[in-house]
Amino acid sequence: MSSPSKRREMDVMKLMMSDYNVETINDGLNEFNVEFHGPKESLYEGGVWKIRVELPDAYPYKSPSIRFVNKIFHPNVDETSGSVCLDVINQSWSPMFDLLNIFEVFLPQLLLYPNPSDPLNGDAAALMMKDRKQYDQKVKEFCERYAKKENITKGTADEETDDDEDVTDDETGSSDDEIAGHADP
Image (cartoon, rainbow, N blue to C red; front, side, top):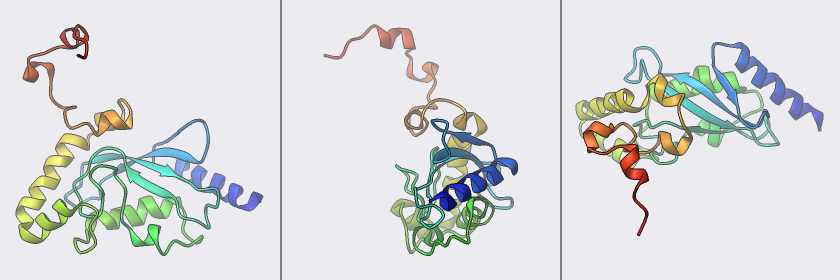
């Protein structure tokens, strides 16, 4: 079945030739990261996220798996896994769509128009419906803390989602040398 593999190759190459920074994983075209910038004139403007894309063998007939690697505060993005709740990807995917649609239309629309009535992050949805001003502030705080260029260029996914990553040695009163000297009981 060479048609899906040719389509996959063409779609990934189209994404690489566009303005997106694409980093392949394991030198294949089935799994890669894409640098995604928050849409202009949104709460997410100025934010930069690493998006993990996994293409199934049946792509484009089956939708890709999309998740945020670094944290984002959004009702339709799971805060722990980064999974995205987006009908066009999860339920109504069509082979007419391609990877550029995801990054130029679907994800920007998701960030511009969150849907708190179908949440993956219940806290974000509840806050958005209860206190929009406080929700907006928390989105901006997450952007400042987790959605900077340096957050997507360092470490592994596990390190990037660690809540303590932004705490400096000065704030904790410890250093790597001290930690290295203590064995687990």
